[in-house]
Length: 448
Image 1 (cartoon, rainbow, N blue to C red):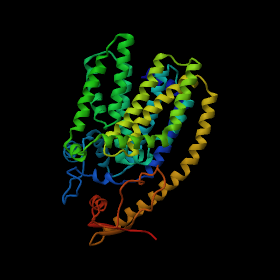
Image 2: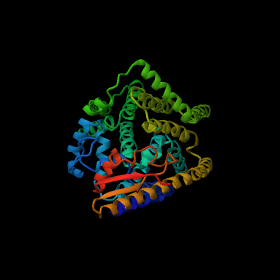
Image 3: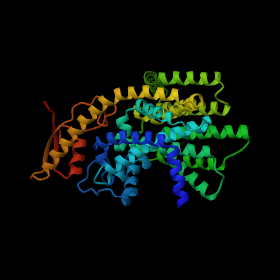
Image 4: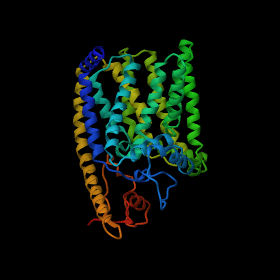
């Protein structure tokens, strides 16, 4: 017991700066989570799922009814049962606080994962001054931050799924010896990664396959854990994609012209958003080669994650639509490639990463203040809606008339681009919020 405590205190003392930085990140994200209430699909997932419509009698979701709910969801809506099981787990609680804390921890874990990939594949020791740079990268480049991180349903689909497929890659990079337990774990993790989502999960499997081929060519070795994981990831992906709900919703005629049009649209979007990152990646790679800071193993690691980035993004050309938040995984893969090079070049330094972190912190402050202001306005307005609805519950008939949210300006605001209360009490969201709060109807009006 004493030896365990001594080891723990030693670890904390050694990494006190890194722990402090991660605590600050946790606090920032927790504040934003606390300032974001439910929106759109969250109200739907409060109940055992049957279909997209409201039923007269609906059972509130519990941990034990999630499998039945997800089976209905699989048949009638889509096959993302892994993501929506997480969403429904948190929607069973009366308070959003449970989700807010767990979600903030998962965000911190994402940063730790990126750092772990970068140190492992650059063969450098952990540098606490790189952690802020990873956070600022995620802050500025996670697409529609509010939808993919702060929105309960969006976070379950993107932030939480990234931990699964990144964990899957990391597990395969560790290359543990084959045993019954490692094989079972590889199968489960592979299945979950394959079923995580339609583009980033398969791209993660592609990255693992590339590392497997490299290992076979250079070391003449085969990882049976990786093979098992890849097989089960394929099973997970097929299971997700063969969902009757997915088949019905995705029943579009994919012509070559449609795919080419989508590809052009994605190219234009990446050109607008990601060219600076591509330029930075090329510059860092050239500098690392000139300074002889990388070997072939590191070079191929950067190449494989870059391939994964493009695969995750351009796979959306096969989809009827490609909202920016679906690029979440692709951005994370690109970030890992970038920070492998950052560690390779600057990992042993302290001053330059510190200066870069201070400069990035100033940019973050400039970005954070208007984002926080916009989120706070929406938080206040939704809180007023809740108060108006709660007041209606005490009257007869239980009819609420609440102010419609004013337009949101920030991509960090979860209400920007998600469905809210409309004027018509028979609108989809009005009906679901009525069921959620236990009132007869909710109608909206525009504030002057």
